[in-house]
Amino acid sequence: RPNSLSFIGLGRMGSQMAYNLFSKRFAAAKDSHFVVCDAVPDAANRFRDNFLHEFPGANMSIAPSPEQAIIASQTVVTMLPSSPHVRRVYLESGGLVPTLRMLTDEQVKSTFLIDSTTLDVQVGREVASETRKTGAEMIDAPVSGGVTGAKAGTLSFLVGGTEDAFQLARPILERMGARIIHCGASGSGLAAKICNNLVLGVEQIVVAEAMLLGQRLGLDPTVLAGVINSSTGGCWSSSVNNPVAGALADKSPPSDRDYEGGFATSLMIKDMGLATAVGETAGSPLPLAEAAESVYQASVTRYPELGNKDFSSVYKYLKQAAEE
Ligand code: NAD
Image 1 (cartoon, rainbow, N blue to C red):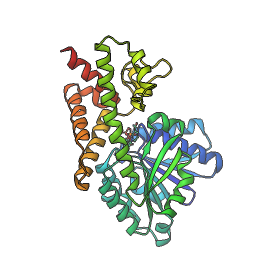
Image 2: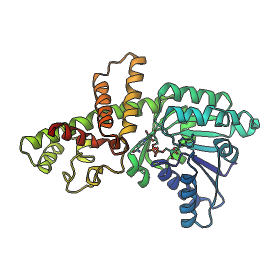
Image 3: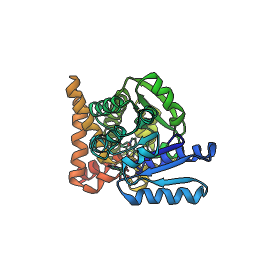
Image 4: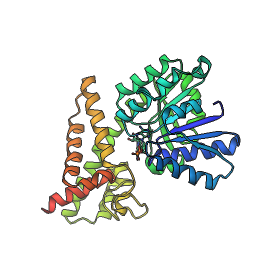
């Protein structure tokens, strides 16, 4: 176990993060053992085959379940879609927490769990509390930076947990990210992530509205993007993730690839839902989050294929509506 790392959830983000974590660890310690686990066996097989092709000497195995992943390793990173998946992997029978209860005290004390999923703050806190009751340590460490940042190893990690756990996590997270920010106690990383995505989700829609309106008023989208990006309306959704194909001469956002890659609209709907739910519990009004959630939802109801495309494809939905 001591020299072993497990990664559970090898999707769009997890596969890139695991690659960086394992390849950098392998470069530093050739005797490390790596374990990968995914509910879709092909995802784990593909990752292992590609990794071993590039690093033929690496010791990598596939865990058929979270139980096997934690038995094998004292450090486990999870990167799953959302709350139900995290509950399943951590709390249900055959999950990480029930398995921890079967390990020796010494094994449990040396176990460190990092969850990078974006999920409900309350569920995240509950899972961390159940994990810590066993004697193991856990942090929430959701990320910002998208698939591009995951690939480049430049993600921002927003960490919730004790100062000791944060220090323990830092060298691991530094292999996958460029900025590691301690946001506060357990659940604080998730709270910060949800607030950031609330801004992003609203911002992307209003940029799409402005880009569409400008064109209908006769503006060239490249000129308009240039104006917004050098004026007070400038923001990531316009300068990096501009929703109009060809509007950014020097960048290649998902809109240039019919919105392939990037951050799926279905995940943004999930994040807007996380914000509105937690807003209700915290007594914080979120009129724009509610409106944005319903706009994304309407776009996917109307065009189901947009669910899997980048959330900037909301522009396509607005454009079609304008043309009808
Ligand atoms: P994804 O759907 O591509 O990947 C999730 C992976 O988890 C899949 O491979 C799936 O098979 C696996 N999985 C699901 N249930 C499992 C289980 N019970 N056991 C083992 N594996 C299981 O999602 P993603 O785009 O990689 O996003 C992951 C998380 O990161 C989400 O919470 C998302 O909100 C967040 N996030 C995504 C982005 C982005 O740009 N894609 C950016 C920042 C944060």
